[in-house]
Image (cartoon, rainbow, N blue to C red; front, side, top):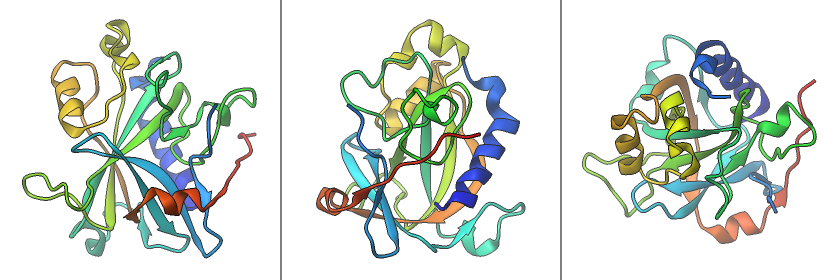
Length: 209
């Protein structure tokens, strides 16, 4: 997603969802030098790492109502956010860190979904070859956000990384995570191998303000 698109996601989430948020990092995004960027994601069936490449001028929509061409076909991208204070990344880093968008002394390695009180997030997506019932992979993605509840912080569930859709829905059933919040954002990207990511040039982003 490009800067104006990411800013749209930030504004949407801040205005509607902040009430739900309890108060050695590499770049989360890389420039491939050919009009595309790439960032890490998580296979929502296996919990393994994958990577997403997005053309810099890929189709994007965050209008309401959604343009019909974006709704079908599409697949869900689950944006799992973690509150500041979470230790879920102690063993392995989140896909993105955003707390430094508001404090230059803190980590910041991607420029989307910057939300006050959020340490970072993961992108859970379907991957070709790991189809769930009904299928969930498409180059067009529909962003659905989730947040840890106060219960999820108090019982320390927010200190465990959620890496599969099964884990995410179980956490929702337990009351540790909110239901899926429709950001009304659709954008295009494709799953690629780690070698493509490793060949990119790390990006850096200035904090807000």
